[in-house]
Image (tube, rainbow, N blue to C red; front, side, top):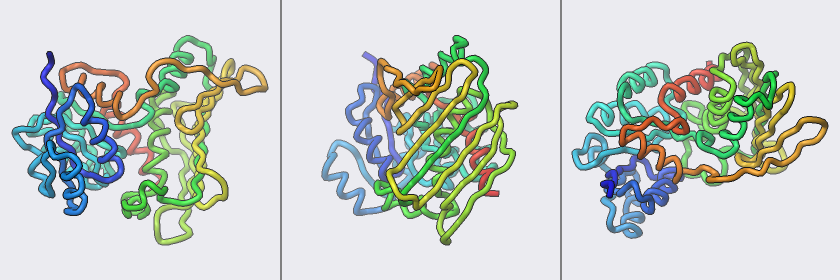
Length: 314
């Protein structure tokens, strides 16, 4: 039997609580500690999960001798101050995206992660759809990739499940370009190549985070376009399209994949695990034990995504 990895969680907002629930039932981990700066959150969760030590002290997880690995689910501007000492103390780190806001923070995190087990939680890194399109490109079914389009629309921002995280709606660390586009930037980076910004633009109708985003980027010579809106009537929509000379693919709603070879989009029947925080925890456990799983995004990928995301903010 493999000894479970002792996991500590820092940040118990929506994502922290979600991953806590996944990790509690995960065979590769034992959740030993979890911390948050909100005493009420800590007290409520301690009552629900008495076997876990909850507290408001970061030192109970970061660099703690009885914690092997750390999941960091705090606002992105705080990541470096948590991730760097954890890695330097010998702890493995699974970090929420975006990796960081500033280039200096990201550089410090990459340096600390050299030769260490470290991953970034991009939700599309191990999805069925990602692997399927990746194989279609490798097999030549797509033909030449001609371009990528990303379209995002939100009736309100922040979304309902993020309402308590006020920073998500603020300019300094939040906005949908950082929170949502980053996932699709990772997908494009992985399948087509690293992105560089050609022209990026944000619009603000309020003092809060962006209400519209327009961008032209390139992956090599392949054009990649982003358009995003907040405040539009209708449901939230997430669309990523890759256009090829033989096949084109459309991903909608994070999981539904369609293919076109003529004038019609047809659904792709995907098999195997969908991909989730649970499966990414499995990949992270493999990394902790010395493997290098392809479907776990590393800090280098996180920095490439951060760089193009922050191009919208300068």
